[in-house]
Amino acid sequence: MTAPAEPTTTIDEETLKRTLPPWRVVLHNDDVNSMDHVVRALLRSVPSLTTEEASVIMLTAHHQGQADVVTCPKEAAEHYRARLQSFSLTATIEPAGAR
Image 1: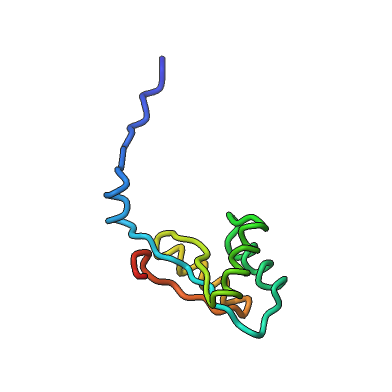
Image 2: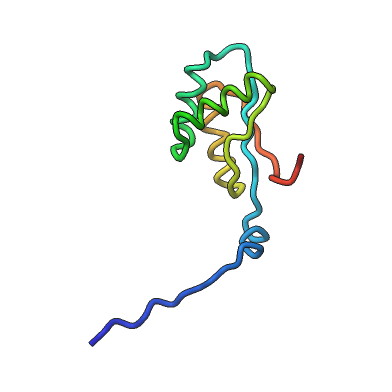
């Protein structure tokens, strides 16, 4: 006897964006934290980042005043912002279409 097939649900990308609209986590430059600290904080706060990606984000914020860290649903963005702030970094979130 075989097990019943798992039900499959397909959600198109547009429906997903309406249900969980994307938010951007933004890292702001500061004159307090070292570059090494910022990279370490990024890696610990957003585990999906590589060391290279974290370095690029840190340098972008350093040179341009701010940098996008990750785009994700709002609840996850709030979590990442709080994690970055726990390392004494300045981070904000905004809707992904807001710039």
